[in-house]
Image 1 (cartoon, rainbow, N blue to C red):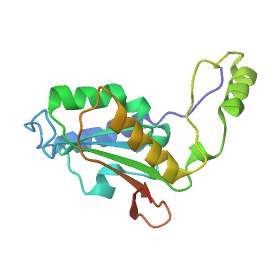
Image 2 (cartoon, rainbow, N blue to C red; image 1 turned 180 degrees about the vertical axis):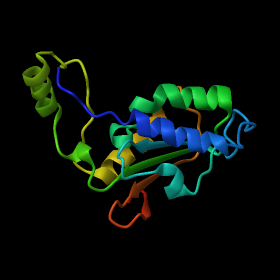
Image 3 (cartoon, helix red, strand yellow; image 1 turned 180 degrees about the horizontal axis):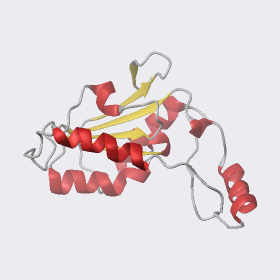
Image 4 (cartoon, helix red, strand yellow; image 1 turned 60 degrees about the vertical axis):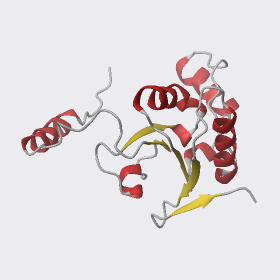
Length: 168
């Protein structure tokens, strides 16, 4: 077995420092701003900082590419049980999802793991703005998602700015 360096000691030390001055244990369960954010898991994107959110403000759901279909379960719970009434989508420039196809990753899994992943849609895309528009449409048409405002953005990893994506 090969040794892999773990970050857990650093995380535990950081948490000890964080918890020592923690004062937000009384925040309400529903998000105060009644918004759910679906964003890419890219480490260069911190949705809370980008949007000026604090703990307790919003639900932040992250996955590869910030794809809406992967977030449906969480969005339904967020809306039905916790009262969110707005959705914000954030995709970004220089996304890893632009760099492969389903066939490429399935072949890598077969080669590296000896496993078949043909049943998984990895949801890569070739155009970030189009992926945002596709995800807005998916949510607007989904029978389990409430008719609420849905706004899509592209986060620019080079500048930290967001730009609204709109149909032309």
